[in-house]
Amino acid sequence: MRDTKYMAIPPGAILPGSLPKFKIYVLSPDGRYILWARSGNEVNRDRLVTLAETGQEEVYIDLDEEIKYEEYLENNLGIILENQGMPDQQKAEVFSRVSTNVVRDTFETSLGLGAMQPDSLRRTQALVNHSLMFIAESNSLRPLAKMIGHDYKTYEHATKVLWFTVAFLRSNPDILAQIVPDIESYHEVQKKELLKQCGVGAMLHDIGKTFVSPEILNKNGPLNAVEWEIIKRHPLTSFAMLADTETPAFVKKAILQHHEDYNGEGYPMGLKGKNINVLARVLRIVDVFDAMTSRRPYKEAFSPMEAARIMVGTPEKGDASPNGDGRDPRDLGMKKCFDEKLLRKFIVFLGKVSSQM
Ligand SMILES: [Fe+2]
Image: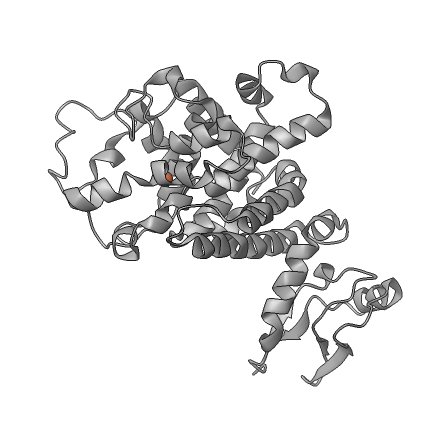
């Protein structure tokens, strides 16, 4: 049995010329961990090439040094995700590990403060910036596959909403043109900046949930009226937390409106149709899709196909009595919640990316 003191990491995460502040080990054929690089020493390209030639698919670090490893990943994320020699699956694992950490820290440092901490916003922007091209160009759900169907966790949810939002918008530039009508005159750098801002909005849309107690967020069953009213405040809280930051107005609006329904029955303001910001209409779709394909305390995960079927469905007359047959009335069809044109595009997008899984 392998020693639990060590943790396996992909060799592709170690960059030539870098100075990792943690020790790296390799496993010998007789099962011993041999020190391969000392903490703080430069790892040069030749040694990494030699390591790759030995066919090592994993190297190891001390479990005690996991935090140092995670800092290293976050500081070098952009370069790691551009590493041509690293398989997409390993990049996705690095991305989701860094992203989950950034979201967790962002939520924890915001707890009870009522404002987004500048350092958290900076880390979120850097994360989105460094992962943008990897997400946009991966063209497949495969790297995300390990996260689909998992238990619903706010931190993982933010990561998946970021992924879907960026990938979807990237493959539908006409939606970005609804945010910025003169996008045709934009340089690549400006387009990337726009996509980054949308990604930051996707990451932070639920930041206001830091003001909702875990008992309500993780309740194993339907919410009562009071709990529901508390939950319904979170878009407004998210908006307020970002109010004094330099986040663009359309992103703040999208966060405020991400639970508005296209037919006007959403919250907090009951806005209708095109009065709802276009990024908010996208987030509404992506947010619901990810929640439905995650395992929640009171419900099994739907497959992506089942979730899409429910999202385009319309309840039949008589079906709408809440919980009359024990089923969640929303599972009978949610079409009224969404901008139908955007939803159709999203389903086409899902078809494309899941066929390559
Ligand atoms: Fe939300």
